[in-house]
Amino acid sequence: MEKPIKVLSELKFEEIPKSSINRFWLEVVEDGMGVPIKIPVIVAQGNEKGKVVGLTAAVHGNELNGIPVIQRLFNEIDITELKGTIVGVPVLNAPSFLRKKRRFLDGVDLNHIMPGKEQGTVSQVYAWRIVNKLVRHFDYLLDLHTASNGRINSYYIRADMSDEFVRKMALLQNAQIIVHNPPSDGTLRGIADELDIPAITLEVGNPNLFQKGMIRDGLTGIHNLLGHIGVTDSEVEEISNTTVICKRSYWIYCDKGGLLTVHPDVTEIIEKDQKIATLRNVFGDILKEYFAPERGIVIGKSVSPVNQTGGRILHLGIMK
Image 1 (tube, rainbow, N blue to C red):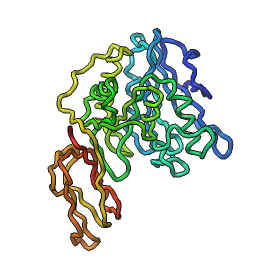
Image 2 (image 1 turned 90 degrees about the vertical axis):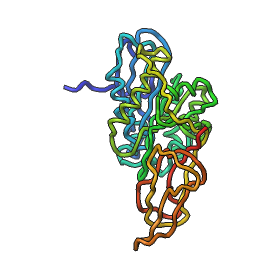
Image 3 (image 1 turned 180 degrees about the horizontal axis):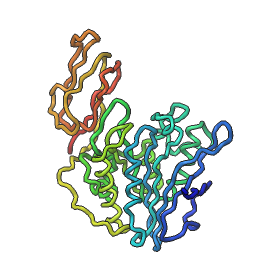
Image 4 (image 1 turned 120 degrees about the horizontal axis):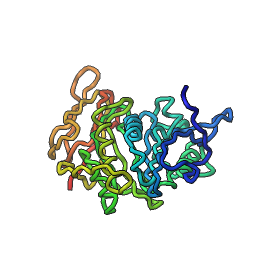
């Protein structure tokens, strides 16, 4: 018989046994019938007191690759060698996960309104409690994401590369691309930085599915970090010399509507004035061709043919 999982209203590490891995349901808010909305939390606590590493996934309800990354990590932890604590939250945005939607119940993107408000809207209160019930406990944060609907991503990292330790956290992931991204932007990573918690965002592939290769790569990078900071005895793999570091990035958008074909592949380096997309009308006539405004690398791109005015074409990273 499956062992009952304890329900908590607060996460108190001092009450969790050492040298153990425990699963909890953490109450966040209540729904319209007064029933608690709970999120799953896994806590691995070593025998020795040490740093607390937080891993979060599915802050957008359709971004799933981070879930098995966290599941597999806890299956691979040797609790007898653990120094400190690892906290995994496979699904942070439970209401949206159940609805297979990116945004919260009120249509708001949770990852744009952090730290939320104690007294606010539905999404603001949810965000505030996530920060105060979970994130404040962490010494490090790794927040796992994917692309959104109709788009695909490389395996890339968002990090404040001006911070020496955060830079090291990012490089240890051995990702395809790292994008320098100042943190004060309303994201979970941003609020962690404001709380003096070193944090990076891992963009691990595509939405609404599990990708074995991306999951494996994300897991390897996390093991690297855990070994580097001494929380586990994981062997740290050599930092890749093929990771492309971008000083900035931006999306290129359509200024007309129609059926869009984006030509370059993800991680492809494109040159200034190279053709990147073709837009046709519903009869198949070419309406417009789009060209790269400058040299860069394709971090992500649109794969949905139907693209109205203002739709995304590709995410261009500008290399150092």
